[in-house]
Image (tube, rainbow, N blue to C red; front, side, top):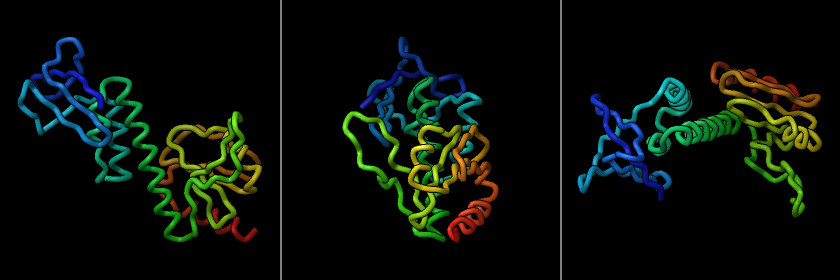
Length: 195
């Protein structure tokens, strides 16, 4: 469990204030509770900056029902980290849902035996029909990671909800703006399943 101190703005928004904060917000996984003295506060509204607002909007676009309150309860840089992690998780869940509608999909399946003491990327996000690896990313790909996967899978794709930075090995592709059109991913998979 973590605890953070906040104060309220004139608009009633909570802002971090570790020194003089009169409101204590407790976070334990997905549970968030706030108290001002002994009184519980139930209507929590945190101040968010423009960068955080963009992340929140993207998360809500992918999954409108996701609970963002636990991520918002963290102050400052840690909040941005939590929001980015949540964005990654909801996007990965979204990709799984669209892939599993049409294909046999394994999620986070280990493809290599782990060797003690050796760092190895061995769990692609998704394996489609035992032939194609798919990685869901929200900002940028890791070439070392996908190169490890490319040793096992001739074809693979790195998919992004929006734009991003992407470098891939031979026979792999980057697909941006999956939120706008996921049929491109279906067409690409169908083409390479025949190979």
